[in-house]
Image (cartoon, rainbow, N blue to C red; front, side, top):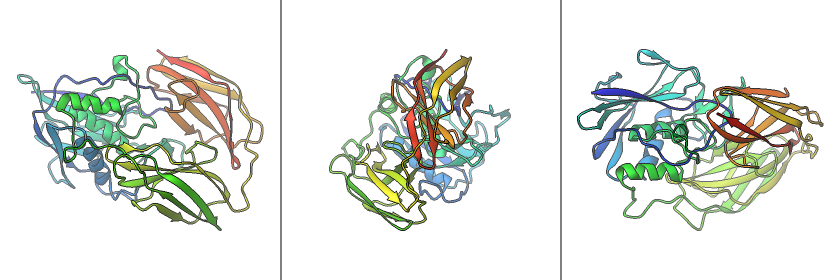
Length: 402
């Protein structure tokens, strides 16, 4: 028997892309992979799931929809002994990887035991680093009250369970396209075509009752209204794609942004209402989701709440520059006009895109340092933000991390 460790996700603001799935050298025999979920209880999670184990179980179900010859099976709230090479696929939080310490930037690892004579995997434990602040949520990465990134267990679990199946990091093999199996955490929170193709190559493409499972189409006809601090939304269910299992609402301070909120409604109903919303101008969209993925957004609805709405967002940051030293990227810019209270960094895989990061830095400082950035080419911009909204974009800088 032999063991290797697949290091999971590094927590940084700038994120690289992928281009073609990559395999570990071993895989499971056809049949069932039994995962013992031992993550414990949690407070109410942002996406409405009832517990850490429920979030992880949903990630396993998503992979199951795309593979044929093997299937994950879950033991909920398992009491199986936790140990390395003990015959159980344990999934749990810990401050260490058995006898080894976590790297300070590592969110999780997947261990790998396999039989040398056959090349077949025999055990894989998934260990989430308890040193981080965790929740379960979709969309862009969020921040804690202290300004650190809030780790999303659901997307990290998708990544780790891909390692369990035998997928590795395409970006670390010199490739570059969007995928959950990237070594760097990003705004990607669902399986991408590259992830699905890799799993299907290993175990055959999954089907649901003989019909491929497909993501829903976009909801339509979104409208929004406000009565005091209570906001009500309604929309029409998608007319194409698979049936939704729920909906996500995005709210931004400018068109196309989701910087204010992304949350699950917790229902398949096509209406939603919530109270306690602060005065301001909100740009709202709805997405449909199921186990196969999340749809593109509905039409966008502009909503003004209360008398505090305004239109004087800050100006654009000026003279935005970057520098690179190893895997550390430093960003600098001149302050924007209009009394910004914070700045937002956008990073994309191409000019004008923000598919890799759209992160509120939580500070009016005019510099930012990101360490542990993965190899790749990034197109980076800044925006200023205050209570009235997000301002126009700065000049764009190309960042190359060797």
